[in-house]
Amino acid sequence: MKKKIVTISSIAASIAVIGIIAFMLMHNNEVQYQTETAIKGNLSITVMATGYIQPVEEIEVGTQVSGVIEKIYADYNSHVKKGELLAELDKLTLQEKLNQASAQLSKAQSELNLSNRQYDRIKQLYESKAATEVSFEEAVNRKEQAEMAVKDAKANLSQAKVNLSYAYIYSPIDGVVLKRSVNIGQTVAAMFSTPTFFTIAEDLTKMQVEADVDEADLGQVKLGQHVTFTVDAYPGKTFEGTVSQIRISPKVTNNVVTYTVIVNAPNPDERLFPGMTASIRINIQSEEGILIPMETLKDGKTLQIKSNGKIEERTIQTGINDGISIVARSGVKEGEEVIVSEVTKK
Image 1: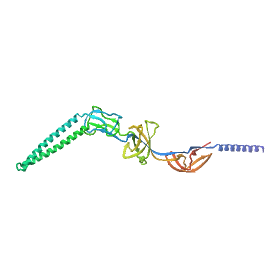
Image 2 (image 1 turned 120 degrees about the vertical axis):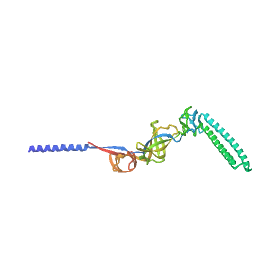
Image 3 (image 1 turned 90 degrees about the horizontal axis):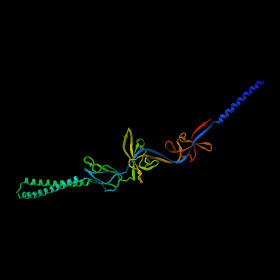
Image 4 (image 1 turned 30 degrees about the horizontal axis):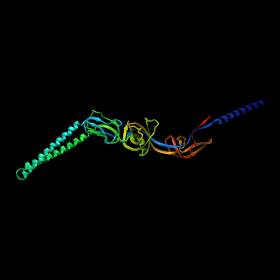
């Protein structure tokens, strides 16, 4: 009888120990929550692209005649005014051609005077029946040919004067010389194309970015959209502009299709130089409100809030998102802790 009592007591003690261990294990399981604070801010959806800074207006200045560069009055970075003399060609050959054209006109005029006198004489004889019709027609023909020769000589003289004027190269605009392409003593030939002497930018305080936008993003780009961009020359500095033109001509590089988007970029302090590489962000859409991480949402528009040690589930109205954050239009207040994930710790 005593032995049975001992056995029963041992079993009871074992059950008690197991119960105590189970109780401790159950109460040692803690749920930890990872949260993010809801903040107020502005969320923007952007299209990114790369482009190059260029002047809004850029003009190549040259001449329409061939010759040797005699004088140069402008250089790189020179500020020039409209009508300012930039360079001169050697004028010896052009002046000689002008002299020849003038002499040719004098000769043609002399021949016209002679043909006019002959015509008048033959006409009188013809009218008095003292000259044949053939001789009269020859006189008329000589007179007409002499008149045409004078017209041609006048045209040649006018062209020679114009060509001589082309020996003086003037600036067509107010601006800054970006490039000088000729040197004193250099021979330029204008037989097939106009040689370029200078490249002039009209106003470096007004620049633009010529950016290549991927065809997949082009449908979101609209005129007037706000743009921010950076250049390597000024780390940490952000410049601003607006979309002013979307060019419909495509570019194909390594089977990638892009379109040129022009961004107006004010440059009042002239920090931006032509040719700088610009990394741009086109602001497609923006919304101000309460921002929360996308991963806090459950089933689309449901999330959990941790407040005073309690967990509260809410349904919210959402706005735009950039794939990382989303605008909560209602249901969440600034400063509230939104549950991102939960982990059970044993």
